Structures are given as structure tokens and as C-alpha cells.
Image (cartoon, rainbow, N blue to C red; front, top):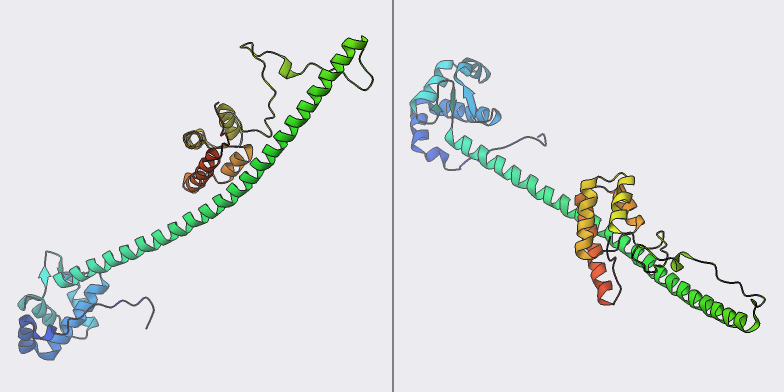
Length: 276
């Protein structure tokens, strides 16, 4: 039997139905056999058969059209309209088959979506581990730069003291050159230089960088809104990953995972990106 062959339920007490008893008395087992053959036709044709096709049905069953008409009209086993005849029980069972098939499709779709979400979370965890590693490296680098800056300031101070005493700059000590940190900003305050390659970007810079990567304005705005709300630190490498996976159904679980990581860092005193 072919794998795509369908079947229909057959009540084992169908022979005791009064309508079937009347059919058996009037037409014998021939009429009973014709009835079940027509039921098979109805399942194959979606529940309805055309009245104009009775001659063709009779030919395929090797019987007379008059017997088919008698079977349809005299025993209450079938219903008719102007063009078709049908069985209410067949239509009811066909509806149940469609409903069962839809439930199976829905269940399969949910299983597939669950697997995709699990895959996305796995990728998000890998990205989070990578980002946390970079954050630790950045912190160590900033600490090292801070120590080097203090040491340079100490040497500069010592050199100026020696210069004041001797009236000249001692050998081996280079007078400090003016830096950006010595220049006031528009508010009259001194601001240290920022290394944008190694620090989080301001929100407006992130939006521009997202557009350069080809991320739509709507998607970048959604990502930035989620990042702001959850205090997520975003680097260039994040936007490059978002550009390669520019689908919100994929990015949502990733951003959620990053938000969880951001909350843990905040509890330990790690400051997220502040403003933009």
C-alpha cells in the first residue's frame, strides 16, 4: 500500500443502522456494496459527488445508473442539493482530519521555532563570552595606561622642579608637549582624549556606524532602544555581528542575553555606556 494512501473510520455497528437494514432488504448485499463504494468516492473527492456524474460512477462500479439513483433517493443515507449529493457523516470526518492535520503542522512549527531560539541563545552566549573577554582586556589596558600616565606626570613634575632649580631642562627629561587634554572644550572644561577604537561609542555615533554597515534605520533604532533600556555596552564588533544577522527574531534573544550579562557587571560596579 502506498505511504500516502488515506483511510476512513468505519463504525463496526453500521450494519445495524435502520437505514442500512432497509437498504439490505430492498437491494441486498449488492446495494450495501454499492453504498460503501460510493462512500470511498466521496472521501476521494472531498465529500461531494456531482449528480451529473452518476452514469460515470455506475460505469466505474460496473452497475446500472438506476441502482445508484435508487440508493441515493430512497433510504435517507445521502443528502442532495441542485448539483451534488453527499453524506453528513463523511463531511464531519473530513473536517476532523483537516483539524488534526493543522494541529500537527502547528506542533511541528513550534518545535522548529524552539530549536531556532536555542540555537540563537547558544550563539548569543558565545558572543557574550567573547565580549566579556574583550572588556576584561580593555580594563587591564586602561589600568596600564593609567599607571603609565601617572609615571609620566611624576617625571614631568620632577623635571620641572629640576629646571626651576638649575634654570634649564635636565638631560634625559623632555618637556611635555601640549596635548588635547590640556585644551579646554566648548564649556571651558578640560576633557581627556578618547580612543574610539577601544571604548564604547556614543549612541549617535552608533546609529551612524550602523548605517555605514547597511543596517536599516528602523532596526538600528530598535537595537539602540533595547541597549539603552538594559544598559548594554555596544562596540563596533557588536554592530558588525548585527549587520551579518540583520533579523530582529534572531537578534532579540542575543540582546536579551547581553542585557543579562550587563546586569551582572553593573552589580559588580562596572559602569555601562553613559550617554550619547
